[in-house]
Image (tube, rainbow, N blue to C red; front, side, top):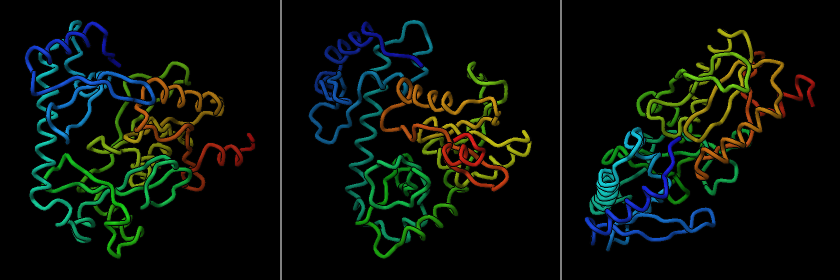
Length: 293
């Protein structure tokens, strides 16, 4: 993963001061208790905040070269922020959430997985996680919101869940992708990435794409380790009895610490697909079954 260098960060600040005065500004904002430099639209109370160290994740193609162009990066950041704010303002001017009723929600809802600690009031428990319900806006397909109690109007979690499963084939179908490289600390075996076509909250594909996990288990002739790499995807790996769960869980925590944004962390341990029962269970439940704890 590319990281923002101090030298490039300084170049970006200079470009903003020289060429984007009155359009963008650089401020210090708190991120996980640490104050870091961030970019905002100038003179706009609705502006999103973009931390400097998140820029490589948003524009990876600009960091493919040895010396990224600060001018091009700032231009891309400005366009993204401007379009984002204009879309939200246009949505509000068109009536905002006033035009969103039960029928709208049921037609555009899809499921997402969040950690158990997530502060949401509409969800269905799923092991030690929560199934929540995201709604894609027809007017702005790149924008979504999470259903909360104030929007329910008589809807139940069960109705939302059933509708979300019906919608995934249209809004965000599950897909299984190859991983070109295998983590060296794991035994030989082909790893797969389970996500959805949008690669957006695709970890929930373990629910609506379970047939893909089942097919992989049958092909490999083994149970499947499910590594929650983020809320957007999971990594699947054929289980080998030589794999220590302590190592697998340590790997999950290492990735969470070094590679995943805090708001995108899903879990701190692996899950298992059990062929015998056709169920997805926690690593603890699986270890009890096979007598490891």
